[in-house]
Amino acid sequence: MTIGKMFFLRYVVSVLLMEEHATSFRI
Image (cartoon, rainbow, N blue to C red):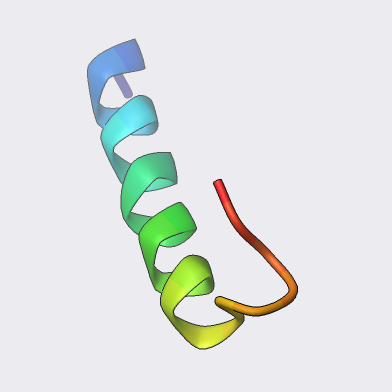
């Protein structure tokens, strides 16, 4: 797995977490 893919997947997960827990978790 390349660093780009890992960064992209981590970004997607972060966005999903931010949408689910917008009040408690913010980037």
